[in-house]
Image (cartoon, rainbow, N blue to C red):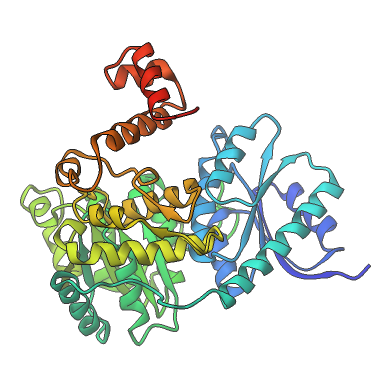
Length: 448
C-alpha cells in the first residue's frame, strides 16, 4: 500500500503511546515526528511543514482537566493555522475534548484507540489540512489587514513604520481588543528581521511556575518532567522578534529575571549555568497604565526604560468613529468567506447604528459579534436582529431608525438566547411575568 504524502506530529509524554502511534502510522504516512513534551511543538512546527498534530490533553500527574491541551491547541492555531489538530484523551474525559472542538480542534480520539478509526481520522485530517492550504491560496486577497483612516490610527502606524526600520524595543499600549498583537506583527513584517521568527508569548496566561522554563528553556533533568534539553521562546526567536504580550501582568520577582535577559542579551536554561547569547528584537504590550504601575511600585522603572525605547498607543474604537463602518465591512468580508455565505451584507439601518455603539471590547468585540451575526443570518442582510449591540446610548440615538416595537422584539430575542430559551429566567430579567412574556412573544412571532 502506498504511503500518503503527509507529515504527522505526535505529542504525548508517555513513551509507549508514542511508540505505538509511530509503529501504526509510519506504515501509512511519509513523515512521522514525535515530541514527549508540548513545549517542543512550536520548534517542530517552525522546522517542518506539519499537516496534522495528534495532541494529548494532559501532561502533569494529578492535572487531568485538559487545560494544557487547550492551551497548546490555541498556540498551534496561532503559529500554524493550516495545521490540523486531533486531540487524544482518555475514556471518561470526553467533555474536555468537546471543549477542544469549540476551540478549533478537528476531532478527538479516545485512548485506547481503534486502529482503523484512528487511521481514517488522520487521513481525513490530512485532507482537511490540504483544503486549508488550497483555500489560503484561492481566497480573495482584497486586503490583508485593516488599518483605517482616522488621524489617531494613522499616527500610530506612522510611528510603527519609523520604528520598524530600527532595532529599538517597542512598548504598545492600548485597551483590550485594540489590535496590539497585530501591530507587533506589522512592525516585525516591516523590519529587517521579517524573514526570521516572530514568537508571540502571552504572559497573562503563563503561570509563574512555567515562566522560566517557557521563556528561557531547560536542561534534561532540571525537573521531574524534563526528559530532554528544550529551548525556550527567546531562543526560538533567535535573530527575529519576540512579542511579550500583557507584560503589565508580570509579577515583580519575574520582572527582574526578564530585565537580566534584556540587559545581558543572554538566557540561562533551567538546570544549566552557561549563558546562551540571544539576538532578538523585543516588542511588548499591555492594557494597563504602565506608568501608574511604576509610580505605585508594581512595575520596575528600570525594566520600563529597557522596553519602551518607543511607545505606541493604539486608540480605542470610540476614538476612531470614522473607521467603524469600514472596519465592520472589512471583518464581514473576511468572516462571510469563512462560512461560505458570500452574498451577505449589512442592512443600511444597522450601519447607521454601529458608530454609536460603545464597543467596550473594541475590534475583538466587533469581530465576535459579526461572526455571531453571520452564523445566525437567515437572509442576505444582517440586521440589528442578528447583531447583539443594544445599549442605552444606542437606543437613544436610534429612535429615528428603529421603532420601539423592533427594540422590544430584539431585547426579548436577545434575553431568550442568553438563557437558552428558559422562559422563567428570561421573564425575570425582563421584569415580566411568564404570561406577559408569552403574549409578547406571540405578538412579535418569536418562536423557541
